[in-house]
Image (cartoon, rainbow, N blue to C red; front, side):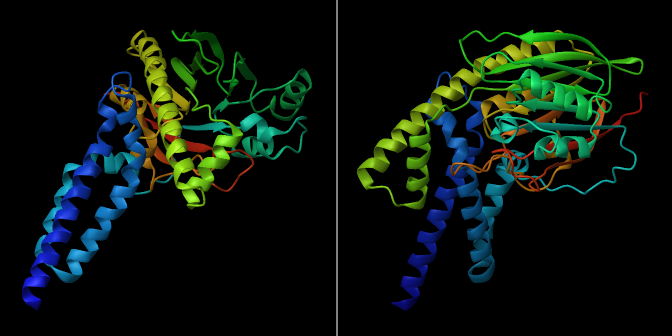
Amino acid sequence: MIRHLKRVTVRTIAILNIMVVVLMLLSGYAGLVSPVAHPSYSCFTLAFPLFLVLNLGFLVFWVIFKFRYVIIPFLGFVMGFGPVRSYTPFNVTHSTADATMKVLSYNTWGFGKFPLITRDNTILQYIKKQDADIVCLQESYLTEYGLRVVDTLMGRNYPYQDECNEGNGGLRILSKYPIIRKIPINFEQPTTNLACAWLLRRGQDTMLVVNCHLQSIGITEVEKADFKEMVRGTLSTDSSRIESHKLLWRLGSANAQRAGQVKAVMALLRKFPNTSTLVCGDFNSSPLSYAHRQINQRLNDCHTLAGNGPGISYHFNGFYVRIDNIFCSDDWLPLKCFVDNSISSSDHYPILCWFKKKAIH
């Protein structure tokens, strides 16, 4: 009787493990499907870390209690290697001593939502201290006084600066390399978010740098508070159900709009097929999303190649996910890339990457 009960229990747990593996794969590869056609399914990528952790738990369980069943979670990780590596890569850390370029991308949240920017602003001081060669900023709104402060504080470090401040995007580039020209990227659907590109002169080479702030979810402060309560389990069942449907609809709609925006970015990239390229910015979507995958088909995700762990870059309102990215063309080797959580003045953490130019054969 006890032996039969044990057999049933093991088989039940095995079935649960198989279900978790299936859900992990469905969520991990949801970014392959266009959110325009299936907006709700596109949100499933956000559930991937839950199923990843559960499958890891099953792996530990089988190692301890029934080793031969390890094959279930193991096959799950093999079949899901792509999304697992994209979400939480592990790489050997390279020395940055040979780096020939350093890049910083940072959604500053209006420089920490300070109404008046001063020289001692923590975000400005952080940017100056990092001394990156190229800095791409999002939500970097500045008044005329703020512009003077930035120029006084960092004009010597960054003699070449430009901005795209239409709508909600507030994009800015600080560069040690001369700016040749700016190329605005037009989105088909009306939006307050934006993307912009700049051609830079680096020695004898021309570089294309794209700075993005893709479609935001657009939830209100009240909805953010409700979501926090929902995560904590303190929201009533009926209210939680309503908020879940509302959030799912908003996420799906934003994903669909973001797909069109990435299409516009990709159209620009195709106009510069042989140009050294960087794409930086706040994608407002997970590293498994459709938007991320589209860019990753043409360029390399630097965090995947040279980072470690999930690299959580957004840390407010109960959402903890890497939505800030730096991509590079094949002529660059990312030596080190990481999300710096040492500064919390913004709702985003900055992402930094060191590069080495590959030798031309």
